[in-house]
Amino acid sequence: MLAELKGLDCADLEDLERSAPAEVAFRIGVAASIGPQDSAGAELFQFSVCSPEWVAQRARADGFLFGRNLLVVSPFSMTVVRELIERLIRRCPGKDWAEIAAKLAGYASWEFDAYQP
Image (cartoon, rainbow, N blue to C red; front, side, top):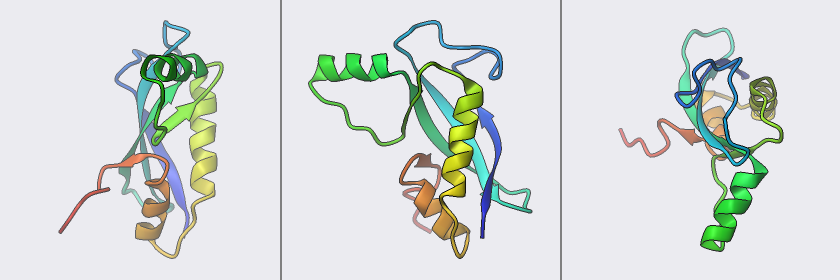
């Protein structure tokens, strides 16, 4: 089974395709709607898209930085962010959606990551 990117959203940018962070050292939240190919359904996977300068600032300030959910890009381009997330999705096939989602959750915060039925 394969998955596909259904959409991207970013509350930190006014126009997702035309805006860019104002600062050189930036971190923005990007929500990717990802679901099985040939299906309308999707689930949210959240990334912190940041610059190397932001990573360096945080590491200097705190002495360390954990990196789960980080996508570091330089320079910022939403086109590149989209392409990188699509590339990640292609690297995560599975026998079913649960397997694919679990693989993607290793890179992004999945909305059902800690879900217990």
